[in-house]
Image 1 (cartoon, helix red, strand yellow):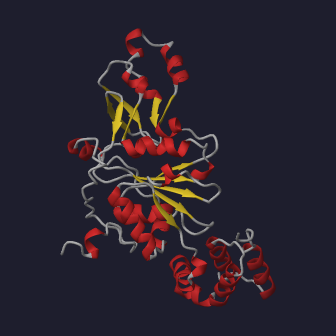
Image 2: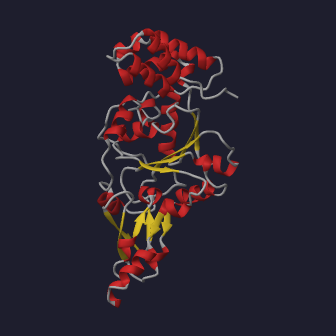
Image 3: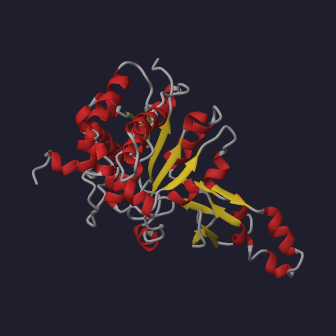
Length: 336
């Protein structure tokens, strides 16, 4: 291919097709790999397979040109993707589509709350459990089993060395404590973090559990270092503004509202429910878009739920249909 052609730089095509030929381009010089290729190759398969729910969402996701362009920029630059947008616009589903197409495995997910901490994103240490077991062990055993009580968190697991990036969703980052977003990006920027409980033992190698499973991974000198930076998607409902130092380290995407593009909305309905149901629901779709255009806050999944129920093979008279549609597509507020 000619250098500079569009096909050269598109890693994510947004066509909902699984690919087995992913080869990440070299990172920018200011984002060097922190681990070795042999270690990354040995750990590349340590990722959960796609769940049925993730596969379904990935197969039906409708990515527009702006979304594809921004995802590719984030992949090339190894930067987190910060997505803002209204409810039901596909903010948290995008990562499923990318994970499906690029075969990144089941995305790791971290729903953020006001009590979330950087430590829980990286790893957890069950000190009480270790003390309890230590009471029944010899002195020699006590230094050997600490790995049984450490579990990497979603971010910690995402940062394990691998040839293909792991996918991590940090959902609703705007709910976090004011300092957490910058603390998170400092670790992601560095591509490495330290587990003091391991390095204190003076042992060069220990095995710990990965997030959400029983697989164990070797940690050397108490440090986790990335080879490929994880593909990180952070979602925000726009409940607060972020400081410029945080924003400059992200690739930002304002998720388009499907109600602004009737053709895309119909494509979303057809992808989820089939062409035949979409065509039968044309009037319902048009009325839904009219309400959104007039200023109501509505979510796409409300429309999908209504079409699925009233266009299904159920005995339902017209009064029931109208009442169900009204109930399932109740407005979520008014646009600011």
